[in-house]
View (cartoon, one colour):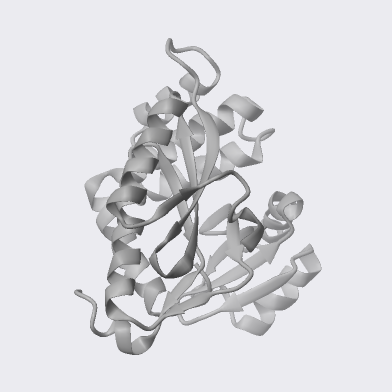
Length: 250
């Protein structure tokens, strides 16, 4: 999501609820499997896997789950290997949505996504229909306690970052996609341990929702898409005005 607005706070609450439901484990497991499949099982040689393992550790993911996900990725367990696929579409109000999925059955995933869009008053789009509205970036998050914004900015720029955004909770460092792990490694060498490292999509333009019904519809569709078993990440180009955010159900 763009910026630090009321929707960001809504999303943070939802993430905490998802964590309690165990959804985080399944998402991290899929990421570990994909990372191991693409880059092998050695985290020292596979920065994407190393990042996924750090996320698993932060979420207190059981070691058995981690081992099983790695074995699945390198083909040591029977069953179809999952693959990544991106879906696109529109929510009410002209909001663009990108959905990253990890699946071993494209037909099932596509059907589930189409059903969710229909239920959520949205429209599933063809490949490329909204992707041009987003920019792929690397994103590194540090807790606010890591240091003051000026010091973090200097360290990030020295490490090759493109930009930094800070608020009362955290610092978000943006990089070129192919520089993400190099910048994270350089920061780590300076004693700055990231709380999250990932590739992200940022919208080029943002739609501000100032109608309560439309905001509810967009959030409903977002939840429907995010709750699908194969969904890994949902990106959208909206924010919610303060007046409307205050009227949303807590």
